[in-house]
Length: 595
Image (cartoon, rainbow, N blue to C red; front, top):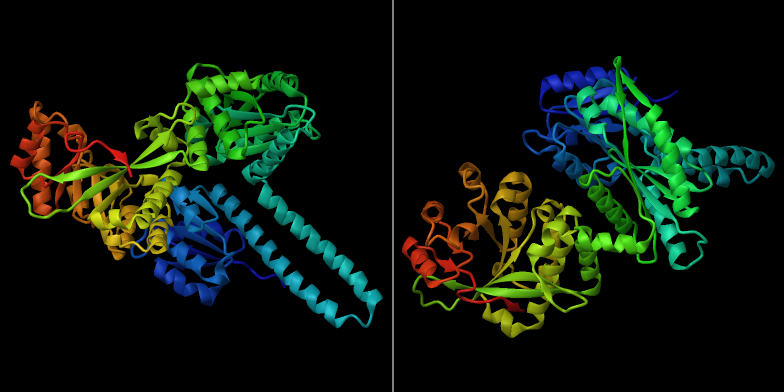
């Protein structure tokens, strides 16, 4: 008898529980509900659900922490968890916490049922495969006496297992909305093509084609996610029908982006593909609720050359070329030679992304420091320094400053790699130079908001402290005030973990989020760094002087010391001293130097 699957719905709003219960019940499921993360964890062992629908924002432990605790139990490591959220920013955090999928609020019945059915199918196939493996092992032991009969049954069961394994592999490598290959499958295929180009086993230059649906967001926002998924499905069919199975590898990359790897034929094959695609898209009409929509595509193609070393680099390059084309009003472009590609690199942000990757791989980054100086008379000889990062230009040897490359690092999602490199190398140098370590009383390190959001980033810092046997009380980690308030929960958790190791926390560039005083009272930070925008001209700008004065008074109320950045002359020093600022940092005192 087939067992009815159990779905656990977790939400602290009764109306949400009722609506989801009504929707899921139609799928022939047994529904169990919990009104909190704590209650859900208590029900897991008793009910053993096949799927968890988990609300993000709840009283007590939130959805992310509930998911992490589910994953901590080995028994539920394969249990599908689908987040239910109204915020797009929660989606990536949900995947980081161990989620398998997401449902957006307000919920749409068909979307919920489609995603739930997909996850239940994967879960059931996985469990059936495990059961079949156990059964096969037992039968091989028990039926050796009658090999002919056993072999006949084994062949049948192995075929069933092979089918299920093939089905699981299919689900793992295909997008369930469009049925095309997904990003993971494309990564594997592009890596293979790169290997062939570098080993010169490919007779033709392969091409990577990136396709965007220009009207997707309009249709998706106006008609809903179900309409958006249907548009993706229909266009996927159109695009895939135009591809050659022997030559092309067609995928849905993400969102409204498709990608095609053209294995042979070069630019001529791509031109032919674009020409046919233009004709088909001109004739294509998307119909939803009696309304007709015309669509268009942005298509760019780049050659996969010997200079490309990874799938991420190909994606980054194609994305930047597409971005540049859209800004110029160009919706179709084929880059026919690597020279043109390199020229575009030098003009755009992409060059910085590639230089950052090279810098990390070739150790071209350098750790520099700038000393902080006390503004009030004191008998202490504290030596406080802030760590600064520089990137060496491989060709000229010139040092490049963060303003040149940090924005690109954030755009391409590699800022955390820089943060980790700086932290690791700073601690390594301090451990290898005990005289310098004994001399400093505090070492300040900047960390980006993207790094703070990573679940294991605080653990990485703790591991580095343990690796180099350094006292956490000497380290101060600086987080910009605006990002701290925009990501309050992540920031508070990050601060709490570092406080346990004795580290202190500074709110950097203070003043940009000055209106959020109520939140500041709940953040466990230790000192305030005033945004240099207000400091550098406070001696001639009465408004900025007033801002600094207000921030200092606020810091005094919170009993937090203050550091002023961008101190460039003695006039600023005198005004800061008159306001009671404890520490100053800037070229007036010390120009940064290599650690």
